[in-house]
Length: 286
Image: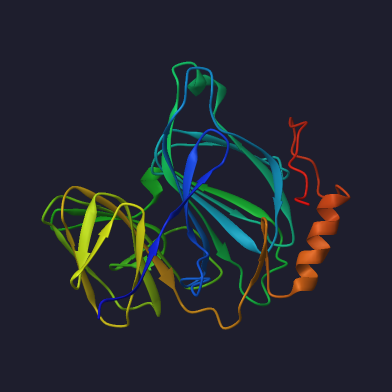
């Protein structure tokens, strides 16, 4: 069987725009290092409006932002300010602790901005959870691209299809953006222990199972072929299996509950450095 589990994204309203929360899921906390996977939008805002995610903290993970359309401005307490555009990769390593905000750039608000993309987290492995926080931006031209027949592939992180992304990871990772015309096929390699295919737009058929937009299919251990049932945009994700489970609370990921409790108290006491030019923050949930 090519697909061993189908996960339906659960819609969440984050204040004026919708996301589909896919991971974590009951019985499937992770796929490779991916412990959090949100499908952002597609959303259209009124003129003058946009996304305003106030400063908030992370530990023990790396955030990965990949947009199909629209823009976001990232600010963090290391002093980084970066506008991310479609096809770019923002990779923020939280390590022992980082705080950041995400907002629609002011210049994009006037016309009524749109947004569509994927935001995910990868857990940091044992022994690497407390690394120094860091931020890396990789623009479109730096990412390896290939064609497999009519299918366009971009390797966002890790290795796949004979290509290696320049994004530095701390765990063997698979993350690929695939654009598939109707009727095209994609043979998904088995070089990674855990793999899944998420359909962002369109629909595919894999081993007799149909996946539509908003669904993730966790793949079995054998080679699998996806056939596009229409113009389709999909994300292939995974990597090596994590040897130890992770604890997850709010924006914190850790191998022990003690690390979570420490991060909660540090944020409650505002011991994270402030994000420059930001005066707001999201309080610790009660």
